Image (cartoon, rainbow, N blue to C red; front, side):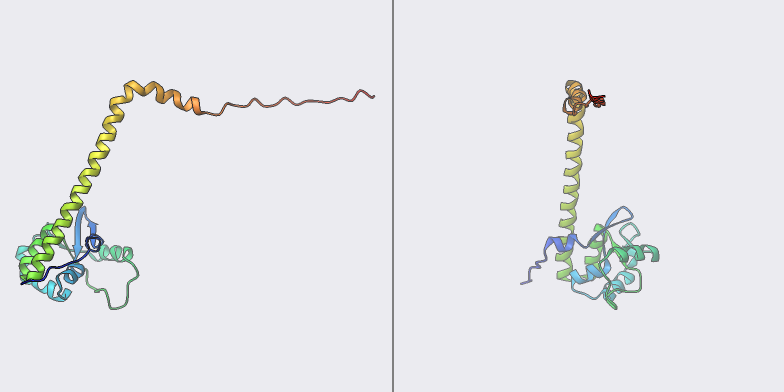
Length: 173
């Protein structure tokens, strides 16, 4: 009987980056999740490179890698590769599980894809809420437009007239 993998969703969500307009996870993070070394993961990808079109897997350019490294917390010596990482999209992660061909890789990729789906739903819900707010504002603008114009004037502080200077003259001369 195979063991269930329990990894908090937050851990995986924190490993998803937005690069070139796509949500991706880096090779070292996937290797950790799949329980393999990054070097082994990259070797399997290179052996099966025909399964990974550029739309689902790309290698970061040196400039992109530098920018990404500057956004990640303090780098420890020897912990990060000097070579630019591979970035896997959602579909790349699915293909990777077939290349690695282990029970853990299959289960983990399913779990990761479920998280990608949840993130997509959240994004769509956010867009729906913004759209409804805009629709409501547009719908009621005609009815409440006057109120919106008058309200600022009603809550304004009244302007104080500047005081006139008073000159006091003594009666004694």
